[in-house]
Image (cartoon, helix red, strand yellow):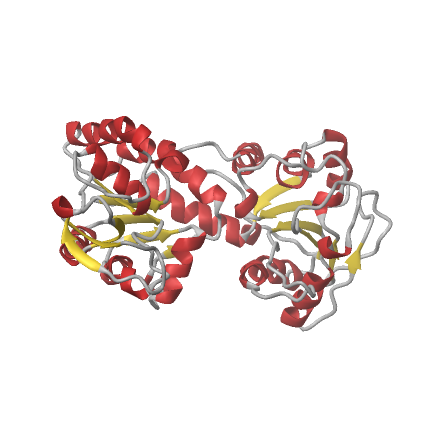
Length: 396
């Protein structure tokens, strides 16, 4: 991918507009409960400040009504937390689209929730032109919104004098590009979740390129049913067994495979008090629910993972939030951590599993992208990335 990077640009004396992803969770009192996204945005902001730029940072927060700023939609708590991290004040600027605010080289201001501006979500061209007039350099450092064409993610990149990727955006694109566009082989993808339907296009896309497609959760149950195995009362989409069968046939025709569980962990109830039973995949009873892969399956999949050259992981393999159904995901997480492969993981539940099993520092790259991560895996064009590539070719 060809795009300019903020870290390759001189910014002294320049007005730098950074579109960050600071959409952090808050409690009912408005207190920030988790600030990973703010931390992830620091390198780009600090680079611009140390380089002598006049820095403007904006982000979306929540789902505000355009044209109306409710107290719960304000970036005020985010500005304060960012100021604490930077050890300097970060003034919050409202009604900023038409300018009229001051920011000097070496200073930073927070521009109020960009999705409050009328026309933001519709990528209004007039709005984008106004915002572009505020800056000399536009920086997109919000990979999590890269799948959306909005005024601050797409239109502004079209019209700003210079458009580039911030450190977080560049790192995401480098990691995902390495994993999917020019991977070391064997390429192993782990895709798990409740429903085949929500990840059908991802599964089909990966089936055309990976060497092993490991499925888990409700998705695996649908594949088990497609293979003629009993799944009892397990979560599955029986209307999609034909699609699952087609994916397995596609993989087989390429000499690749979808390794299905040979044993599973079942229970009559999906709860913290449920009794876990390990049974062969051929022996699931009509009243059973499959809630994890069994130890023999986990060991076999770990062997596949340990021989991989590249690993892409999205989704836990069972109800890992309950310890009695966490064994499969724990084994897979440990195998990825022990593997010498380049590994990329993404998705909220995946990140929670990585944290639970203490392997965060042993995954090559952990994506914060959410929907953008999934759409990249799916092979879709991400509008905010496409415009940076287009500008990169013109500015090169």
